[in-house]
Image (cartoon, rainbow, N blue to C red; front, side, top):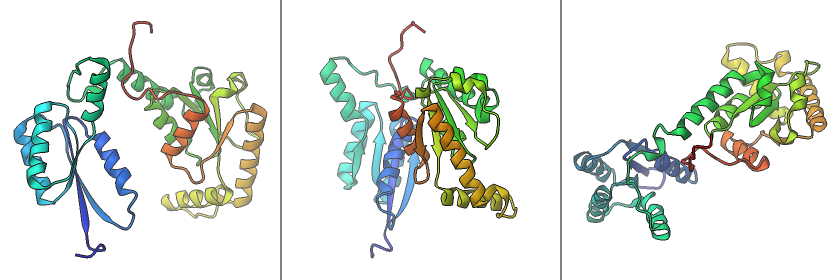
Length: 283
């Protein structure tokens, strides 16, 4: 079999949703754009019988097995099976858990799916997502004063997707679309500039995105909305506003949502609270 014909298979096995192992598999696959991959997920695996069935399926595919099982007896089953079958297996979770135990002398709970439990952190995330929806597209400028982050940008600079992505990290985000000569809410000038991010783009990239959007609606792509000169005017207006505000500016032309979010969090010195954090009663 040549490299062109070869298909590599990942099996993600988890006692919860399997998101961590899936992300790792996807990150690895992205390094090989010319290789064809299959990705199978076996999630919420909590007993030996189900686990052995998943492993047998992986063996048929000669798969790379990535797992985030926390119960020691099930981890041992994976290692023994893969050893005997000559399968590659990678334990994503336990080496770090064991190192924490070694350093702290605290025994881990070994509770499946602990990350996704309905704790205070989870409900903070839900509130942040509700906030992002409520204050999307400048619906209520009063939200700017409550927000952790205020996103500004002309149409199609990913304001709404970024708002929801950052909300998933427990950040309250409001956003405002910018249109030349449009009224700028007074509340925006009351926000600490260190909480504001101005999103911009390259005119040609924005032109292409807007044309594609019109096509997706079955409309003529050549409209005022996608006119390159009008786009330049919009971007000029936005960049002048950013300069007056003294806020961080990020060009999203070549960035994914994840990359832009990371730049925003770094620029504003924000912590990622999307995972488990120490919780106190001092709310």
